Image (cartoon, rainbow, N blue to C red; front, side, top):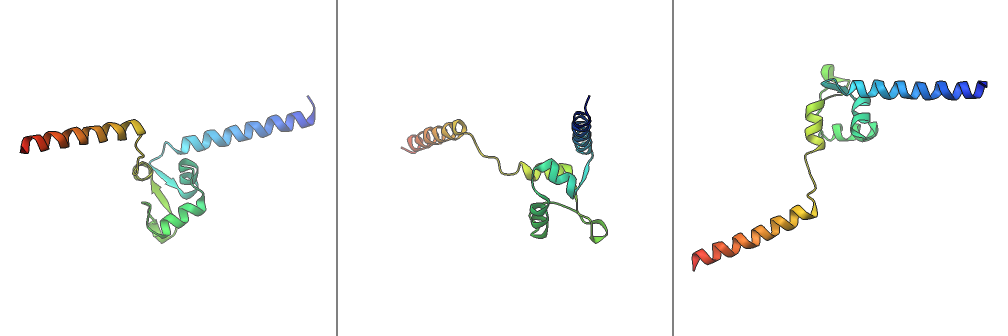
Length: 107
């Protein structure tokens, strides 16, 4: 094995170890800013902005380090679901039919 191959192999191993460490950190109930960025897919800069605008739930124990409760972060991430077209169509049809039934009950 050549030195370049060994270095490439060691780099891949190092990357895999970092990925495993990141995934293990997601098992915790509390995430640091760095962990929350990896977990949520937001950049650290975006999270800083969201926390400064008080748009995302977070804590600052001691007034400095930003931490996130994973459950609250999950709730926030899932707080604005986008409905599928089929769901919207079904709801529209139901509203139309219920509206007609209500109108016929009045007459």
